[in-house]
Length: 87
Image (cartoon, rainbow, N blue to C red; front, side, top):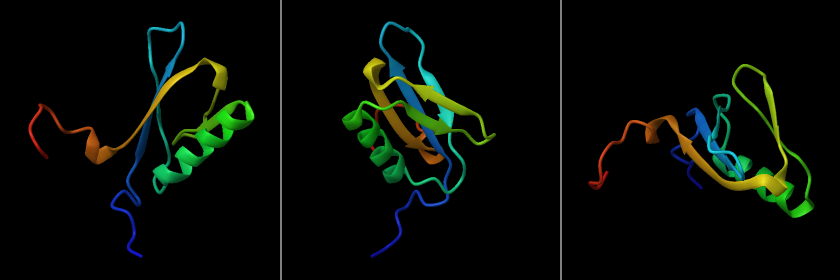
């Protein structure tokens, strides 16, 4: 099995919270696997537990899963694209 293209890249997480017009943006440590973050989110949602993420600087951010509107996972390579054309 080959390694995913995102291995070692910084992972950015944008979280939409209900009743809050601003997104929560978190840059996770280098080497964080997007699939591991996705699994953590799914586990937290299924158990109703608080979702805790730790950013690159070691700050912990907790979000009540019943307030989640959406979660957008991306890598640093995703952030530089502009426009509507094919990559």
